[in-house]
Amino acid sequence: MLTDAEIRANLTAVQGRIATACERVGRDPGDVGLLLAAKTVPADRVAVAVAAGARLIGENRAQELAEKDAVLSQLPCERHFIGHLQTNKVNQVLRYVTCVQSVDRAELADRLQRRLEAIDATLDVLLQVNTSGESSKFGVAPHHALSLARDIADRDRLRLRGLMTIGLPASDPELIRPSYRRLREAAQEIRAAAVPGVTMDVLSMGMSADLDVAVAEGATMVRVGSAVFGARSLPGDHERGPVGDEP
Ligand SMILES: *Cc1c(COP(=O)(O)O)cnc(C)c1O
Figure 1 (cartoon, protein in one colour):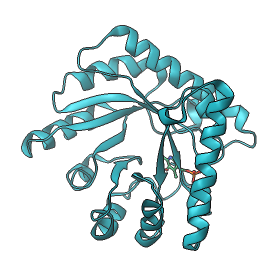
Figure 2 (cartoon, protein in one colour):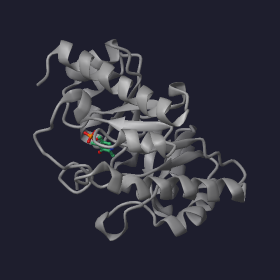
Figure 3 (cartoon, protein in one colour):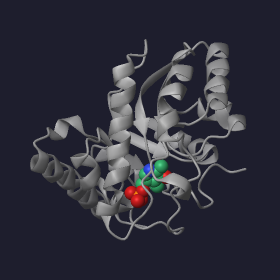
């Protein structure tokens, strides 16, 4: 577990990387949000990052949202769901989050819509796109993104704000660039279709190893875990390991 000072220094370093990556391509660092991916990180460590200025926390599991809620609900931060969301976890997850970034099927959109009707609420969502082909289990294929965007737009409790993708870990971050470019192109295609009620302002892509490439390709939100909180005990667990949602 990292010390408070280490977490603060890491956060500053990541903010510096975002600023440098923006400078290189002439973007405003203010246009790139930083979400801290907090899976397996104890609530008190997350709290240190929030005290140092982090405002957006990502969680992958319903159970972890519940366990950390007593601490995190008291802090000036929002939580987003970024893991694979099973329909039977929707009610639980909606208690805690302001955005679900991982909507990847009409069935899930439906389940969210019905629950949101029941509690009379609306929710920001991102559509998760699988930009890396067969090697990734979750996310809609890029050529199906527009039709799923239309499906989501038909559900009046969901506000589709943009797209999310998970770049598979690669030895060289450059290998991920085509994935991130594909996400930007998918967003352009949906934007061009001018689906009523749908904005495509958010491109959530880029993690500790490759956020610089993601920023260069147009990310408006990077999701960073290990570069701030240190290595997790379960390595390589973005979506393949036990840290999806529990069965
Ligand atoms: C864990 C996780 C991240 C952050 O990964 P790091 O490599 O630790 O920065 C980003 N997105 C998702 C969906 C994750 O599960």
